[in-house]
Length: 211
Image (cartoon, rainbow, N blue to C red; front, side):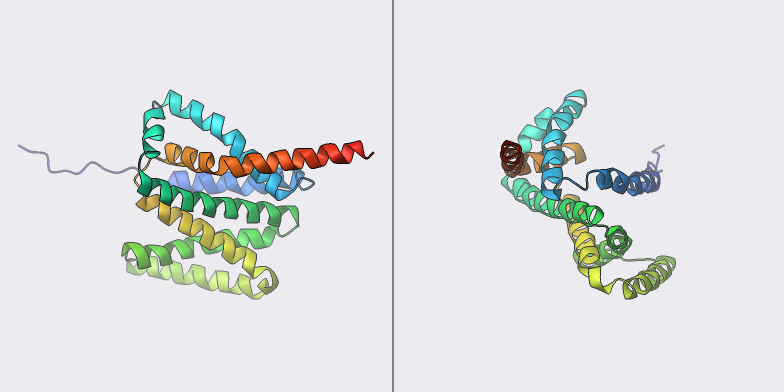
């Protein structure tokens, strides 16, 4: 007799909670680097991610998948777009933390789930159950109250929410693995990042020579 029971899918909730919990401590680290230009921080983050991701892919036997993506133009276009969005997101976030706009940055990530719901409805045809609609409405009211006291830095919050939301949408519709996809994004951003690192290094050396 055939087994008609569907295999239960693992819940993503613990992973989401863990990710946001870790992300909550990230501002402490970036605040310690507030004396470093945000572009330099993002560039270093990108360049150092590449060897780490290559090691992870080697251990997971995903290097072939990583190489295959370069032969798929549609995937490369999508990942170039997602790489641009995540670079913008990182840059704005690190700038906000280093310039004491942490609340504005945090508000952006309060807005992000609402943006995800909107994008899921508009582009993926997803529908919410009644209780989910109530939860979204309550969250929207809470965010609206916070926005009322943060209008001068609202551009920071909105930029973070939509850049990360659109990034998630593109990655969802692009059938590549999470680690190879991130590796491709960082690889595509590497030339600009290397240029930025060299420029800042030369500027630092020139500054030392003038002392």
